[in-house]
Length: 465
Ligand code: PLP
Image 1 (tube, protein in one colour):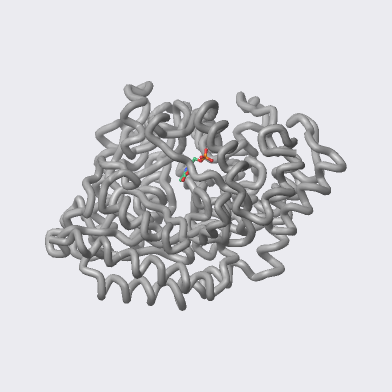
Image 2 (image 1 turned 60 degrees about the vertical axis):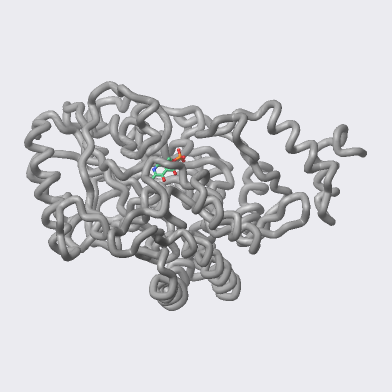
């Protein structure tokens, strides 16, 4: 069958061997004519047609292989086509493909129990959603119901999702075109030692000054009006900002003092990205609600959720929770989640993330920071790192301005193009290159990817004043 008329199953057979120019042309023309893409001016984009993936690699239709150093959108923690996840989904599909949320399902319960077992403190109940955005929507709704208050505080440097409440929680420029919001969100400055808003000269001072600022915001916004504070445990898309020592404990203390619900957004960092089930475990802090998605099943079937503390869950013992989704705890998604737990435990994924992060990635990135004048700072944890690029090391001027899209701005586009040319798919945002490969990446692949980045940084060096 030719590519234009073949069924999907027929076409699969033509994926190998690549290249397949006819299939590529068909994908491109269907996509350009009929697919409306996220966050984009539709006529200005050129999405890469992807034919297949395996492990840490995916292929385009020309047969070019890319090492996936962005794990798609930092969700593909167990890599492409993991056989255990594929088999779990296939088996579940053969037995029970969907079940409505008000019925009990074995696989939904199994996954909820496993999540409760690895959650901190008394967080032991799970409300399942279809992704991270709606997890945050529902977490905020729970906080409002429990406190009887409406306002929510979030960081300027944050991303919490794309729908009405979640985009207003978001602090980064994606919020601007969607404003004004309903006025119930106020933003504050989080810690960022490399670009301290508080003129701090140590991480400890940054933490204490950022906490003093947050306390002032709480008081000036009216403590009695604030339902929740939502914080990415490690700020993700906006910079891989690892909180300085004491900061998150201080947030916990402020929330306790003012009766505010602490929501930890772990959509990007949960499920192993930093070598912990939940990143809060690395900072010894217990929030009231944790939101998750992405890594819970590597995005094989959309899934997210809210892990709920007993105190908040008990509020809804006799008062109905007014919220729900047809696909809450979808069996195919949960089956992939259960398989994820089994793989993590059998293959020691958390341990290997900690090992590869501290033994391979950290020293190598620190070396790049020393050798490349364009590298202002490298920072991160586990397999989640940022390389922040500057045009002048002493003033720390960003290589591209804050409100320029990193993908479009010339120097970053050149760095990204060099990575792709070398066979690596990078995650680029503003003046940063993030290192977030699948957690199953082999050490040889990791080193090869870091070599490609090292070489691409020479291009950024050419823009240094
Ligand atoms: N929260 C954080 C920290 C995220 O990184 C994202 C997505 O990147 C979201 C929420 C939104 O999740 P989703 O795109 O699954 O709706």
